Image 1 (cartoon, rainbow over the protein chains, first blue to last red):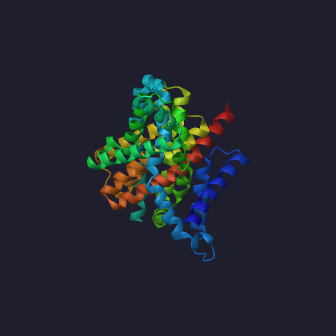
Image 2 (image 1 turned 90 degrees about the vertical axis):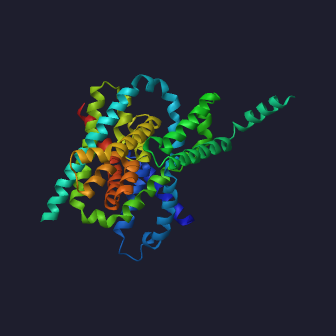
Length: 123
Length: 244
């Protein structure tokens, strides 16, 4: 457990360091995510890889953290009270963007995916 | 000293401590989660949205500044970073799905991910929103921890991004089935993928509840589109600022 937490923290730390060093605009934690995914998939068949040896611990620890993912948005989400004025004037327009954006994205995604996916099945 | 004066003193003491705000946050979330389950996971009662409303109402009623609240609640907020790293695990666990349908997955994530950004940008511009609000809205279709991270680096308002991201998820989960039926999409993988890409975790939960195959593809779409969008938005901003 502790070693898995250490690896996750260390990868985020490394991600933040890379972001700062190269002046990247990709969030540090996302770099950490990519590094963890790469470490797990690239060393999949390598028994010596520490990531493979700790696979089980990494999975169970991550699942514990992700089980409470929703709770973690609350503190920053409450920050909305600082922007009530902005919401008052733009709420309807923002809602319209979300509604139309979500519907169009959903249709577009499903159409593109089914086009490629079914063609592959016919081959 | 009267009892009420003493009580007031206790309140003054406690509200300066992180413990009070941590307890309030967890309590509000547990209550919201309970309500959500009692109402059969009715999408509008999303527990994150409800807990934000409970805590916000408390702060406004008792005239507490957000900074004071966040000073305590930041210990919960801190875990958002590690949780983002941990999102690698669900993608890894579905890796065989990713490799089996990799052509459709990679192509769709790139094209539809770009489409989502263009759609948000164009509609936001058309209705006349200002630049900061557009930046706040841009990452709204990816999972909240990543969306907030993107919002912060491109100069949006992360807390507002959290709200619009949650609303996106709720709308996608509530309307998705109807929209996809309307367009006669029968391929379960494609349906799930659309749920995950357009409305991240909340949509994924919905897809999982209806069909297992759709759920797996939704989870994959959510994870990969989060990564792709996090890389794509800053790149686009870099290209645009170079052109100007």
